[in-house]
Amino acid sequence: MPRRAFVKSALTAGTAAFLAPRPAFGAKAAAGEKVNLACCGIGNRGAEIIKELHKTGLANIVALCDTDLGAPHTQAILKLFPDVPRFQDFRQMFDKMGKDIEAVSVGTPDFSHFPIAMLAMSQGKHVYCEKPMGQSYREIQLMMDAATKYKVAAQMGNQGHSEANYFQFKTWVDAGIIKDVTKITAFMNNPRRWHGMKVSDFLPKQPVPDTLDWDAWLATAQFHEYNKGYINGEWRSWYDFGNGALGDWGAHIFDTAHQFLNLGLPTEVDPVMLESHSPLIFPQASTLAFRFPARGSMPPLELTWYDGVKNLPPLPENIGDAVVDSDIPPPSTGKVQTKARPPGKVIYGGDLAFKGGSHGSSLQILGPKAAEMKSSLPEVPKSPSNHFKNFLLACKGQETCRSSFAVAGPLCQAMALGVLAQRVNAKLTFDPASKQITNHKVANELLAGAPPRKEWEQFFKL
Image (cartoon, rainbow, N blue to C red; front, top):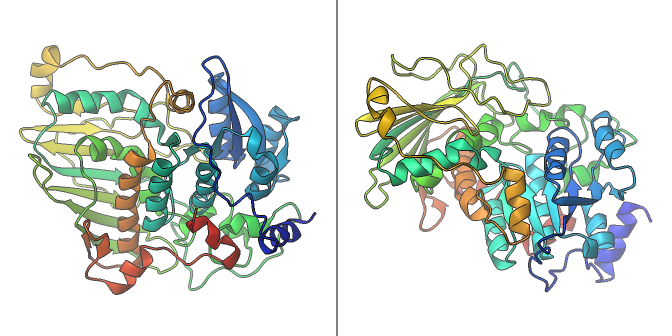
């Protein structure tokens, strides 16, 4: 049956089992069994996720789903798993194979994480979801709530959260080495896809490739005519589809600071500088100041984000060489460029300052105190499992997700507020108690994201 007819039949007949929550909650695989994993998004980053999950030896790939099964970048995974059932629409996959699926990987564009993850969790299936979790503040909240409601393992894919930096940051906070932090400088100054782009409207209509299900690709997003300038990573340039440099890299740069310094949600986000503001695509460069209030004994903290090739951050004179994680996955366009300073951070706490990179790279103490403290630093535990194994062991009830939706959600919501400040080009005041932007009506309305197309409304009610 054609996909549109299938969806119409299911909805009008009231038999939409693929949208109805199921009573089973996060069933755990037995100790010696593999987790039956369905994979949504099988090209580019999605392909890398599938390979890493499969490499653990803990996953049994039972279904593959991609809106363009004929695209060149999907062929490697199709050849790797030639006998695995394949689908173009995840709703059909769940309807036909739901009983055979225990967990789902979501390696699709930012805007389509939400419906796949929500449907999976509502059926008691565990979820590995690439960062950022969702497109809007509201989507992220609903995803956090669903993970709790349906008692599933839900891991966001910022893989550095299972590597050295995670364990070092926690150990150093617990030991009082990282303390009294009042300022963090975070930066990502590599070239981005939208750099040099100038648009005054959405892109003109082009013929949809025969192999692509464009309606399924759009998912809960508002309708746009197909143009190749939206697919294969280009979606990251557009507010309607992506989250820019901040949503892409923030989760790899200040994720551990956000968790272990208990930052939660900012009360103010100030776009100190935006170069070439556009209501459609991300700025050519941004400086965003996130202001977090005091948390218990921890003082107020300002985190300043810098992106743009020439928008280099002010750094200490003794900063030295950059800290670079050797295990950063390459973007779909090639390797991370390092002509500008590689992505990283500087953390200012009390009488100590620390420099760090992204992903799992360890922090280094700046200045002469580094040598003085070297022999007295506490031992940092080794990671018992990488991020992919951690998730699958969590599915089996043997570990807890280190970047669970409960941990990753507030981080992504803070970044979502930063994206809104970029989008409306205005300083935003946020009330964490009421979860409202109190000084900007349009931005406050955008917390909910764009209204979904009618046949996709159900995903907000799961």
